[in-house]
Image: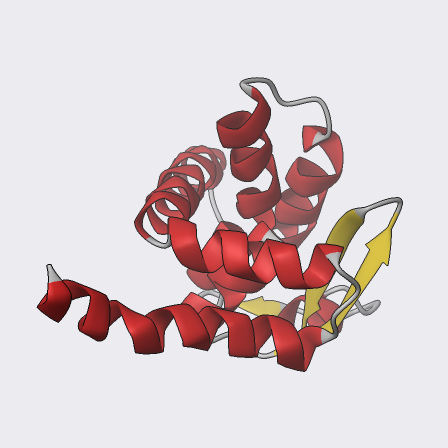
Length: 149
């Protein structure tokens, strides 16, 4: 749910969304190809992918005040950084992790209504197209709401 919003906002194409046990999981095309054996991640692609990877952990912290499922998100980010070309120094990896968490938090706070709309659609069993339509529906109604206020 948070990953699809961050991927959408950052312009990363989404390969699939699945719901397992009530928790949506998002795979973006770049993440999918970067996870293939022998594939590398271009340095210019890493920032957006890092934000998408960190967004689940950040959303969990925002929603529940605690992060229990961070291991998979951090492992994904670590795998992406290890495949980055040119290679990243250890300090740059730490800086990227912190920056990505901050950017994910910023996106989720700024686009809270879109996040709720996408999450609601996915929770109700909608497909990716319907989740994107829910996000865009909030955006389309935002100017009208601002003008009425």
